[in-house]
Image (cartoon, rainbow, N blue to C red):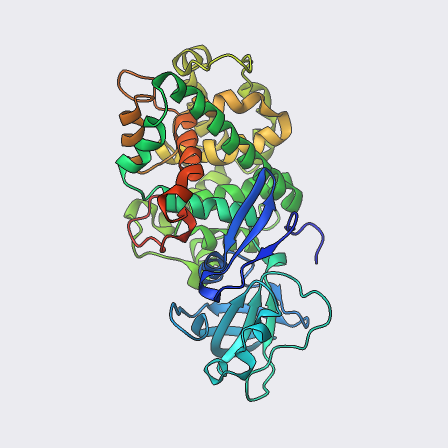
Length: 433
């Protein structure tokens, strides 16, 4: 496995149930988390890996032209995928597993339903010598070990997937997470929960920096946030193809669209979030502030807020003391070059810039993150916080700490609701990202 690629921490537990419901438990940075095989299939479908530069187990090159149709019934996981293997285009089915041994364990090698499979995708490198997968006709099948080529670490994928499921729950169910607590305890519980989310975000940022370096991590993070949920993979493909390097220049719209290829999505995306609009913003940003990652690192001294760790955080007081709106406007002007404003700028600061900066200056930026303007969230989340009386009219101003604390508490309660957030079907509604 290549140096610097994401690694699995701790032990792995495997569910011997059918593949559709298979789940592994992994040891994460702050405790165990679950990773369903359905999420692995989503990663393949959405192209959240290096789809143009990956290598098969036998060393041949692989380019994914189209991932195929997700088959939620019996048979191979994806039908009719289009691949380019060592320069030759191939069309056929794709089967996805955690382990290379699952091909034989599930009996696919003797099942004619799998005779059209042209690629076996597995998450982990095989342990020990295994025979290459073959169809019932004896035809060998190419195999891809996905872990070395992922854009994010496994825990980050799992966290994002769980959050997506949580935010589609109804207001009353979300509100119950806080309403079950005494009023005096709600604010403190939100702070404790928000700190967990913060530590996780900083750890993910650190892992990305270890893999890509500071400038590369800043660049990938910014494009990923610009891509929203539907075009996250396409924007990351642009980042892979056109690294932030003055020698490579800034890609034209046509070049960027070509780099994302079939990964671009327009269905269900609001016009304001359309790929061409976001690509134009990206080009304007980098043209205005080409050295913005280094400028942002130097901004560490402007973001620190000294606050007694045990003392309650008075959001309104912090905002007055730090003149948050002026600081935010400076970030938009001096770091982002005026390319972003409003809620998308707030999302970039909260989910991208501040966690990245914390890897350089430590948790002294936590209070600014906690008290900052909230990133984009569904209205159901805002209503739940209003219902609990912790943010909004008559309570603290809207702030990122309340939103992230609410998400964390909901995630911790999700198992009691009969379905984990990550097991929800893929959302088909409007892009909320």
